Length: 86
Length: 474
Image (spheres, rainbow over the protein chains, first blue to last red):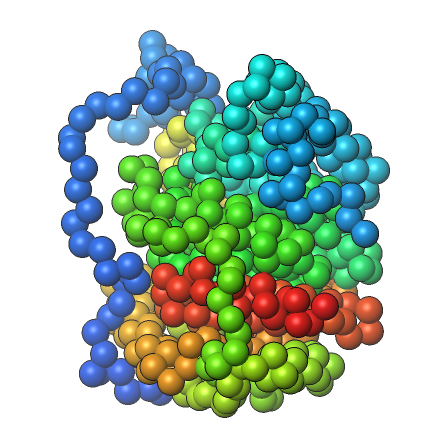
């Protein structure tokens, strides 16, 4: 699971989380006992559908430099990442 | 006795020139400094708040209108993007992050003259109910420094009770405004889902996250809500606000039907808390409310439902912290995979990791139907039960939390025990209805919150009821 979530765990963490997460999953498993086949799943509660707005550029007064200032590494106005292909 | 007049009165006095915004900001900064050992505030905002105060005073001197919150200092939970300080969500992975824009809620408050004077502590990414999951410090309860203030908006609640500012902002995903309000003795209001824009608020579980105020009185909370609420182009999940002002609290309590949730008054509820809630209910009856018992049979399952849906959404929302675009990036990583893995492993605290893994598990293809879909179906059942209850009564009531504030460290070793504290607060998040915690006396010197709930979009009526209840309890 940690691998899927891109988390690198220490042996101690694996030990600790294994117990805790089993207990939590054990608790939430009580839903398995309930018959819910007559109920549609709910993913949101506003009842809103397809909220549209005009596809227009709006100026929020933030420069690309300001948006990039939190990036760990940049080059020529782009975010620089590690090599992806070997 | 608070050093702050009612928020509306502060603004009137500032506008009249009887009170200066500068004086108010200095008072807030001084109080934050004098009480800094409570760890309610992560970062006071000195420079920007003084500049804003000066500008407001200059406008008043010129006879200009400066707004409904002129000169009113406030503190924002540190998961709101603000200028003038870092925004960290109390997490190591966002340490040093400087927001390029502000949350809409902050912008709307500032447009009416309010001044953000500090950022409050929280459980990192709002995961928790005690501030013990903050990656930086643990906030102390204003009534007993050995106890937690509640959470995740624990810093905001403590700051208000410690009189650092007249109000604070919080976010409520599973009780994170109401439970610390209950533990610390503040008023904490969770609006209808979608009523206040979440643009610029660090996302936790997007289908239940809401923004709301913590204040000393219902009247103050209502004014803050009135300024913040309404549609925003930057949040497509927003709903229309009420045409009537949320500050109209004139509704009578007489004849209002209030249902006491039976599933929240039984096993698991501390005897002292139960007594306080029953006493508050008696006061409601004396005030003329028509009080009756109500049952929502699926409520005992709401917590299990929440602890599937919430981590699922958390795991998705926290995937953006990948060490590439902003936030902590591991300096020793030599390729992209290492950069992802190591940045996240060092940057996230234990609770974030726990929720990411549970969320990843319940969303994974083999388990999706058994966990996530099932939880979504239970959510529908809960919504139907609330709808049925609200056909019988106008409001629901009960306790906010099963106990008063517990000792720091008491539940820290057992995450499931910690989750069980949310049992009364999470149902309304799943259903999207508004709810409020108002102080209803103390047990052994520790505050107890009365939980009042209303149907979706009945925020104004709920605030009116809470206002009357507050008067009756005084």
